Image 1 (cartoon, rainbow, N blue to C red):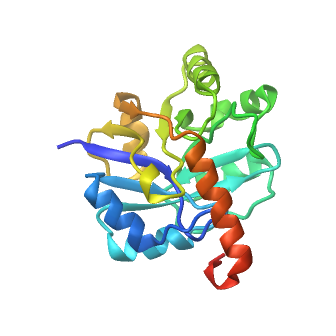
Image 2 (spheres, one colour):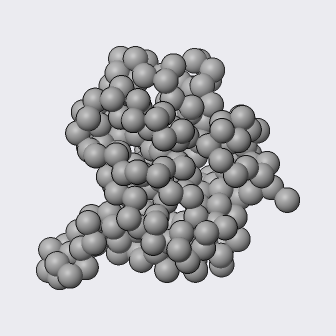
Length: 222
């Protein structure tokens, strides 16, 4: 059986999420997600905690803020710090043998928004770009990413970018079975996407999480 895979999601270890690792695992099982790459902001702690609960399902990942934009990684063993250049970040990820993609490259509402010239500079160094992100507010943002990937013949991923349970599974890629970054790299172009946008409610959920954590610092895990 193929793997229904969630490539991009967050837990309470991200500053804008209240989703615990246990809640994430439970929801993924309910939604019949076979593999989930947990990509907290500049942290692998949530992914490690979730992997303890579901080692067969959870892949340790991270969403890393570089000096130019955000990079997604899967199959990490060691956390990568924020604030490095894209090339330094990628070099450190390659040392770990990670699968590397670029998050929401043309979503200009994000702090991690890429300029096209910066993206072109690293394109030969990454495995894929995210051509659909369920949290992009305008369809044109994902359309531009998809067209960019086609023009430069780069592999594509999709991601729910879930910060709350209701978002999980809104953008998945169904792939042949894989068990490592190398295997994922080999079969990524065979992925069958299933996508739908999350819209404004997802952004509101993140804003609420930020406020809750300011009011109750005990909720902060990173």
